[in-house]
Every structure is written in C-alpha cells, then in structure tokens.
Length: 177
Image (cartoon, rainbow, N blue to C red; front, side):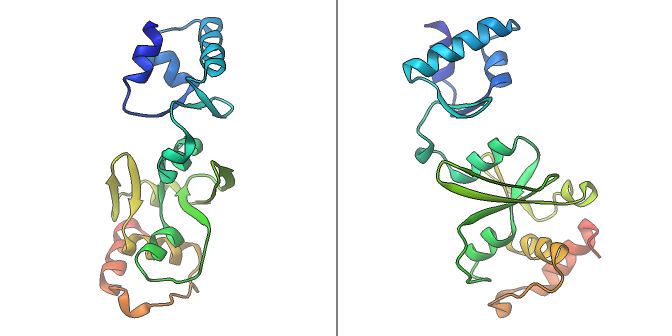
C-alpha cells in the first residue's frame, strides 16, 4: 500500500517508467516492472504507451500536457493550434501542433499531434513562450514567427489582428532574421 499512497498523492497524472522508479526509490528493475504490472492489472495505472502510464483516464488529462509528455523532450505548443485560438487562422485543423527538436506525428487518447523540428539555437530561446501550468505555449506572435520560420509563404486569414512589430521583435530576438 505504501507505493500506492505515494503514487496517488502526486499532483501529476502521467508517469514515465523512470519517474516511477524515482518516486518509489527503487533501482531494481524486476521490482519496478512487477509493481507496474500489478498496478496495471488492478487498474491503478493505465498504460498510455510503452513506458508511459497514467493514474487518470486520458480524457480527463489536458491534451497539451498529454502530447508533451508522450514526446518526452523539450517542446511547446505553437503554430496552427495557437493561431486558431487567437483567431488569426480559420482553417479547421484537428491536430495539436508543437515545436520540438524532432519531427513526429502521433495519435494518443483520441488526439492527433503534429510536431515540427526546429534548430536548437532557436528552439531553446524562450522569447514569446509562456508557461501555463506545466505546459509551455507560444504567444500568438511567437506562433506567427514560428510559422514563418517553417514556411515564409504562410497565409494568415486575419492579418489585421497581427501586431507585426511584436512578431519582428521576436524574430530578431530568437534569431530567425
């Protein structure tokens, strides 16, 4: 019961195998995997994918957090996702778009994710990136700068809503121009 108490008292709901090893202070792989197997059988842990488990149903977990946790590397929500929320583009898109050091597409928990690869010298520059809870998200101006980085010919449906001076400032700060 001791490990269950530690697990269920955590604020986070997603755990990689290594997180569980640290949480339970175990360096014995057999003990770790046996405990995980038993908790999965009892329904305490829900397998998300190999090496990733949840203590809550996936439909109750923030989809941004879920995607970033699955990716398991530095990333932030940007591009079309942020621009749709800001009313700058209107195209219907089902994917949650993120920027990271890898390119990937995947589906988890009924959500589709699209990850674009950015050069590290730009990726790790935090100008225009905000932390909302435990999720990093781009400001609309950073999302525009990111979109122009990936495709300089990007079309914006509502260009009147864009503060181009703020976008140019971010582009200079991050090193896009």
